[in-house]
Amino acid sequence: MLAELKGVRGEGMQLAGVFADSTRVVRVTGADFRLIEARGDSAAGVAVLEADSVTVTNTRVFGIVNEFGGGGIIVAGTEHVVIDGFAVEAAGGVDVDSARYASIANGSVRGGSIEFGVDVSADSTFLTLVSVRNAGEGGVRVRERTPGFRSSSSGAKLVSVAVDSVAFGAGIAVTGINGVVVENTTVSHVFNG
Image (cartoon, rainbow, N blue to C red; front, side, top):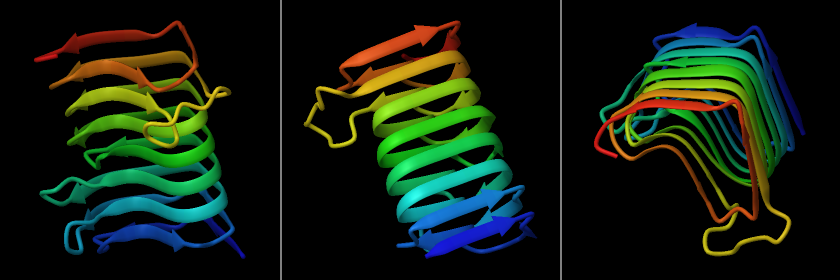
């Protein structure tokens, strides 16, 4: 199955702007979602669960109304993830959980994140030209795909990542990854960390 969404826009929605579950290939391009209200304790701009390939490009999420937080872009249980060209503001962060490969590029997360601004668990991770400002528990976290199991081929590369004004924790946290490369990356103003 293929879900391809182009230029989708919405305001004042409940639960999610895009929600895909068990769809083999998901492509979201040019989406713009504002003021997403929670259903129960969940809310997201784009939420994709259990897919082979997910591509999210040129997408903006502004404002998640949820006391428990939420996510601007959430992808879980996916083999291949590409998020390129995004702005997540007052809407949680970008969360990729349990991917084989994740590439996150050309975007920003501003405020509204209870936890990490960008949180990735994958075998291979590439982050470039990403900025995180005013995050809750940390700026960027990269960790192994399967908690407690370190893959001998796992790796992460962070290039030109900027983290500023983190309330608690770490600007950048990397755990359970075998090879890590960090280039041209800055962290400033980490409070209580």
